[in-house]
Structures are given as C-alpha cells and as structure tokens.
Length: 220
Image (tube, rainbow, N blue to C red):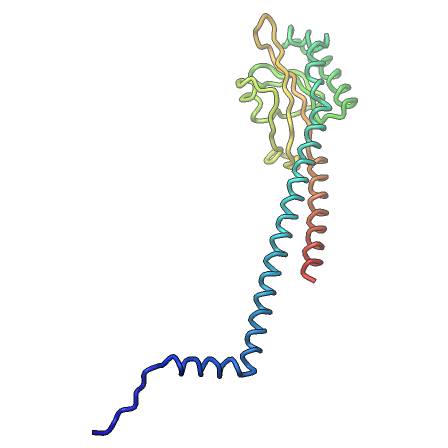
C-alpha cells in the first residue's frame, strides 16, 4: 500500500515560513507604509482635536463678550422708565387718560426724551395695552398685554411680520404706573438691538476667518 505524505502543519515549517517572509525586502516596505499611514492618521486626529478645543474656547470667549455688551447696552437705559414715571406730564396723563390735550403734551415729552436718550420708542399704555401717548405713531407689540398681565419688567420681541420693519430683535423695558395700589398703566421703552446684532455678526465673521486661517495653517 503506497505511503501518504503527511500534510500536517508543524512548528518547524511555520518558523521557516515566517523567517522567509521577514527576510523579503517587500515586508519592510509594507511595514514602513503602514507605520507612516498610522502616523498621519494620529497626527491628523490630534490636530483636529486641538483645533476643536481652540474653536470651543473662542466661542466661549465670544459668548461672554456678547453677553457683556448686551448687559451694558441695556443697563444704559434701565433707569429711564422709572425716571419718566415721576414726571408731571406722565402723572397727569395717568390721572386723565381720556384728555386729548394731555395725551399730546405727554407725547411731546416722550418724543424729546426719546431723541436725547437715543432709544427707539417710548410710549405709555393702559392696563389693556392700548397706547395713550407715544414718542411717535406706533403699533404696540403683540406680547405687551401678556407682559402687563404677568407683571413683567422686560421682554424681547421681533419686528418680523410687521409692515416696514426689518425683523430685528427689540428689547422692551416696562415700568408699572400705579395709583392707590391699582395698576393704571405702564411706561414702555423700546430698544432696537439691530446695531448690536450687526456688531456680533461682524465679530463672528472675523472669528470664523481667523479660525479658518488657523486650521489651514495647521493642515500645512
């Protein structure tokens, strides 16, 4: 009976094959290529992580700057409603809200103050949100009556949907006018935040340009 050659895989043959494979020049070329690829991937990953950390720090810094600018801008006019509340023209208006002559006198006062203070609009409204006197003809914001009912002292609203307006954000300061503990009306000071928003957009574009330049530099 003819003998059958053994096909078992012995440790000696395995070592021989490994030694043969390691002895070939192409093995070291493959190994070098793999190591270079791993190095590039790791370097890109570390660079990407560092860039993201830099962008996160920059975004936090910008948000703090925006918040500080907004607080400063709003703080400049925070005193105005309470100061107007003690003016004699406003007091007489609240006492005689149906007096047309008193409405005109109060409106002239509010127009002068509006120009000097650099605000957008100033008006006096009754508890139902109807305008009694104003620095200029206007349509009260839709949220005014709700803000009065909730006894709020400020709120944000947009011009979006109102004819002839840009849709920018406005900030409204409210001061209640009371007589014998009864609400008789509110003084409302409107501040348009469009100039501040334009500054934020400009700073954002500059930051984006700086970040893009930084990423390009890192890539090179």
